[in-house]
Length: 480
Image (tube, rainbow, N blue to C red; front, side, top):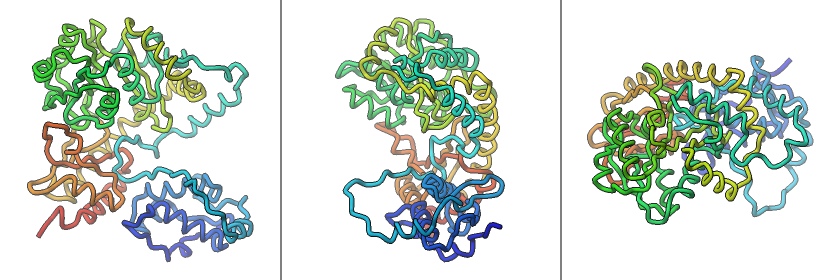
């Protein structure tokens, strides 16, 4: 019979604002409890939700701590039966090892990234089909052959590229061949690849303003002269770009769901952008950011679907639709650029590991990918509404929540006198992954607001998270 450890953990109080992250504090306390023999093999530990409530922290913080302890062999998940201390753990040996003084090392242990509430850019990790994924991984691991140990195809696993071509044709209106698709290490790698092939030092590049800061950093490092172009309710102001830098080398845009404002590039602006690129001999890098997740109507067609003169390079990633640790993305290039990009890939690296590519290929071919996207759209739509409603109710009239028809984050616009940088820092100090909207602007002001991810906020947790955010912001949000 398993014992519950709730009583043994009641004495733990987390220190908010300490140099040691909250999840690390939980890890250290539970390790000490196990090493001391207070928690024995087979003892059941509290659920992540119960422990989060006890500690007054986010459930994701406890999940991160439990994941680390499970990876170290201290805990084992038994599904509906809960999580228990590993029965294969010899606590006496652990205690003895802990009591011996270890020599100091100058090499720091690897840091595990903490999953924080309201974090941007993370899909719903709690809803990922792990069983299906694990089964596919196991199948390919068992079928591992000597031929799989040779150098992979630099441009990517051909069946996966064919699967992506089929998916883009049906869901995004993008017609391309597998030869035009290059597998990358995510979108940022695709952008770096495009900069390597297309840019010369000093070339001008249009960037949305506000926009995605890592894109600006990558292009600046490549020697580009950045030209920030204002974004309004219809997306990138193409006429401003033409007036400021008609002969720019290329433009980087997020037309389906602009990052971070969430607006869509209007049809007249799309046509104007394509016309400019064709006339100027320029290129367009389309980051199809969050395009799969639209909660009103069908997903918008890609800009690439309107590209008759082959001026658009289309970038996509599996980070948001599957999980970011996969590190897989793709770039669709015009046929005229295939040789140049393939040559650059062979110089940069000799391809990516094929196991993950094979698994993703099977995941798509068997229909799991389409079903997963359908489930996530429904789930995110509910979480999107629930968090937005609770933010409005809890934080009062000092904020206005912008509920865009798509995407994976919300913008909480701030009332007069509030500073988003100050509030974001205050929220971060209390364990929230909240970011200031104004930090995304280069030269054009975009107002004061907080960027909040909703995809990992369960509907049942939304009220509690909003209440804790209100307490974290305290008098700064509601001065008296």
